[in-house]
Length: 240
Image 1 (tube, rainbow, N blue to C red):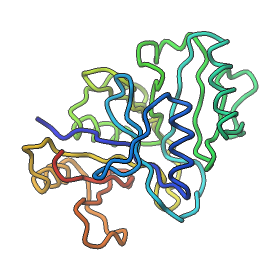
Image 2 (cartoon, rainbow, N blue to C red; image 1 turned 60 degrees about the vertical axis):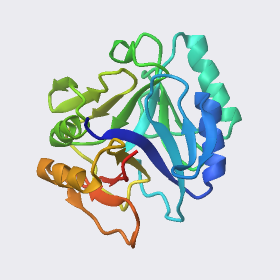
Image 3 (cartoon, rainbow, N blue to C red; image 1 turned 180 degrees about the vertical axis):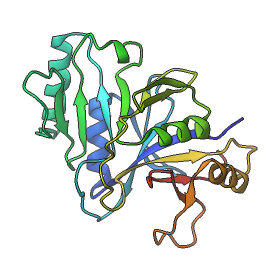
Image 4 (tube, rainbow, N blue to C red; image 1 turned 90 degrees about the horizontal axis):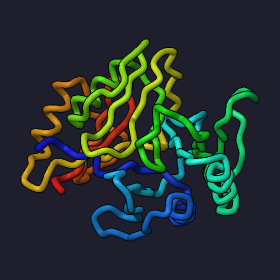
């Protein structure tokens, strides 16, 4: 059994405020897990939790990845936008065109996300979290497909997407041009080998696929900090 995508982690100035916002938007359960910290547990087939980790680093530029939330109708889209605004989100302008029908918002700490218009065929069967839309190369899409053992469901014009065989959101990479990396990403993946797995063997496997080990000042911790071929940080936890 290969490693699993255990969580998507957010660096947060106020983890509780950010966790409550996303719990309200997504309808996920908020929990304080002694092993995973302040987390949201999915109530659908998303398959991974959201973690919120304390950090005082400032946000620099647009995030490397963001949620695309789906809508069943225009009214549904408007309700999602209204709920996010009531919870502390805001509208932002990242250069979207007036004729584009998706709505671009930011959470209370400025993390971007989109509420997609109804009728989007690419995300049609992906659930409320339709995708983690990411800035990245074709190479990094291939890397994550192998790292998670998730099949490629899109590979055209250097744009890639993968999806768990069990369903849930797609993870997409938009291909070139890839934006220059500005400091540590505020969102990162946490991977975990299965309960009978071996953390060091998993680290070595990921290195063979193109990952590298990183020192970001983490000190003596139980997880291993790594970077994918585009330089995006991720962590390999102990077996779960």
